[in-house]
Length: 629
Image (cartoon, rainbow, N blue to C red):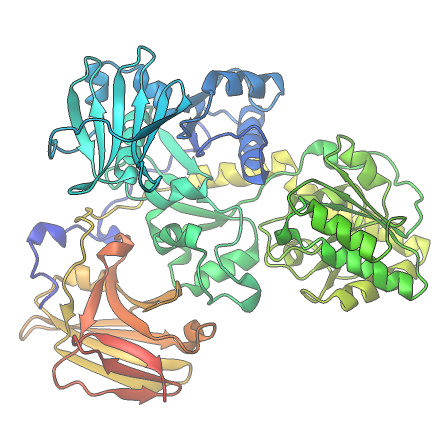
């Protein structure tokens, strides 16, 4: 089957290279929409970083307006906004908009701006056991299983605004109702409903939409008819096991986002390490930018550093397994057994407290390790300590380490993905020890304690100097540059969510090259601009591992209108999944991941062994690659 066998409208969208892109937005004279799922009472690092960026846009920039868009149905929007203003976390001219009160305030004509589809069936009556979540939000559960079968979102007068129904026949249904109770339109998936609202509410021009929230980034990239650039800011790692290298499995909560990275006009990362990991996936790097969170000016030490005993350590971390606080505790015990006295204070709270307290008791470290919980004098405690530790399994760009460096507190940390390598020059402004090696951590602390006072003071100065580039004005400057240069890439038309049939290869060859395998695919009846835009996708059959290869050569033969696509597949992409079988697809750049199509091998194709891999035709005739037996 040829690539154009489906209706022509599905594959005749222009490739970005053949379309004149929109003009840049200019500097920061733009309406900025910041997208979060919600703003919890106890804000984490991602929300805090987003609010700091919003404040910097107000302080240093000239944004025409700033709006925070949220989706959480449990949010008391007015109360949270008042709290944020009172705490100085946003200014009074920043709008905080939540989907549910915004929809409740719309007239029927305003609701009609949300584009859905015609009603598929009448709305069924309410059944099940009802649970009142808020005054505007009810949940219905099955009496038999306890599963949620319906959610009703209501207006202030009690009328039904939207019914989210798990229909046993039709599947999921999101049915929007007019103020007089009449069903107006519906959507089949939550993301389609949310995207319809985003499209209806982002109306100011020129505008840019910045997405921080993982949950939102999974669906917002599907808006293809948008009139605004879309910027994704990645706060943490996208890999399930980042310490194993760049070619591993993608985190489940990041999978939809990472598979569709090229649908964002800009992808902001906080470290060069993460930029390298994204490049390893094979996406064109033209949309990757180094953007960072901010270090508050209050975190910087003012004046000369205090003369401190070297053996006092501090750690800023939630008491959760991800932070592996047991490692520095065990390092303190190891040093005690060597006759070296070190004290450790861990600032934070979390569900791992009891386990850590039990460990402290078991190791008899009650006089050396303190867990005071959340404190309000973090800066003073950092300036009173000599060194800090960080032993997490993974990080984005750890603010806690930046804060300690700003206070002149020397970081002694694991080689964590990501962060330390972007900040620490080993032995110059801190120390990086082998990942997950407690003995090496203890050895480095012991070596640090032997340093002379002048050397340590020089390191403190260098640590403070290093993090100056993360202060708010400098961080804003990076965002300003991005806004000045961002151009909106053309998004091909979305062609539905169902799987497309395979693309028939008229000829298929595989040959060994130094780094892997060269694949040549011959296609016919395909438009030249489409052929030039195709990428080869190699995706794990069971694992969430994939990589993309762009064509290194595209040629055309006039006779028969055939195109020859050549792809060089680097076997490094298989390195973290050596036993996995991978399936092979073709995908047009900027298409949704779900629109990629299997490559159907010619009938006479025989399995080809190239190095450590075998390319073969499955029982359905599609091309796959497996470990060589």
